[in-house]
Picture (cartoon, rainbow, N blue to C red):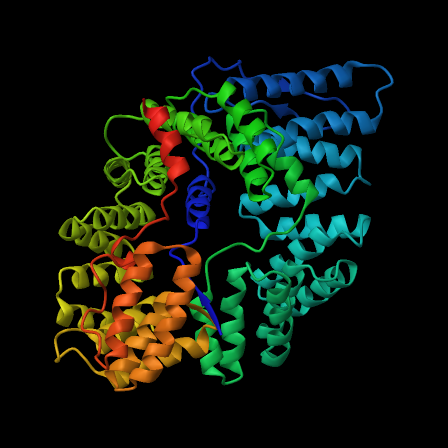
Length: 577
């Protein structure tokens, strides 16, 4: 038996800030620099003319890059003795920039010239396939990748991309051998295993689909999108229980393909947007020093009054936080909100206020946390995490009725939010509306039986509510035992609920024994307030009396949010002064 004492892990702060930083990039800013006049490189030798488009929508730094690359084409073509490989590199260099900036029509002739000049270089058809997919031309993309594999038969990314295109066309018979080759060349590649699983599903070979998809999930348990095809495979086998379990775990995430050619394309532009992309990749790889460098370069290039400029500053603050530079992080977050418009929707201002709000809540600065989280919700009324954090902060400050409104707003945005549903129910408990709370948790479990916090809250109400019409000790004990069978890592809160249910069913000896285990765990953790609360209930059980207070007023359940860090409070107070 393992009893774990503690509230939400300190990692909650890290997760919150990381999620705010990596939740998508900002749109590109419109340049205020006058664009260069449209021009073209008109090559000889029957090659296609390449014309620069109107560049007003990209940064001045990107405009300069494109003009320089166009000049390189002209210089290479004019130089006697220039090789075809050199000419291909010149055309391809401009094509990559145009492609990355989404000037697809202008990029295509430059790519085609590069491909004709260097027909044995697999990079150009590989890049062309990306362009043709973006332009909605899958047949051309298939032809491009077929050419890549003629030149490089063992190219794993090309095998996977071509397999996915065939799957999209409903041609699993052509896709499956490509995924098999990719898996042989790079065993354990999750994208290849996913392709094999999808191909097996298309053939209705559900057993094979389960085998390869379960293997993919073992390789990368974080690839939550795998749960959807797994659910389909188990449903095909008639195992509805496992199908439902996997469907509950599904999240709409991408199974990435490690493709150096795609990386070259993504990182080609010397622009604020490109540096943001590089920084986000570094954040996801936990290379926080590199992320800081990329974001700083982006900040240099981008006006802070633009959405992208503020997004870069917010992400720079996040990188600094992970590097341990809390004052620097707070300064960037404050700079982001200072540069934001006073009103209206603004994603970056919402995220910066959210980051500041989470930091303030973690420092125990409740009023300031509420102020920032209220601003986050104002800048983005659909920001579920901000609404949830605001509701928790209000409840922690004793503003229970206000918190309920915010929980309801979060549920309007995401009716399946487990955190908001549990928070709302606990607010009813705090107001001692036990009958309403019981009904609320029962309704929650009817639609979300996987929400263990709701199940535990209902069990505690059934075991210890002062209203006899709410209590049902036997049912409460059954719920606790269900949770324990599914969760070997048992918290002190769950063990307290177990003791309450035992006492309500008349087993005071076992209840006291369980409560002593809880007392030992909280005493070891050095939590004096928890020791006093746990001791009160132990005395009841020793006197053969049940508990009639499911949560004491000083129970941590009534103070939701991240654990308070006194050292963080000192830093934030110093920063504010």
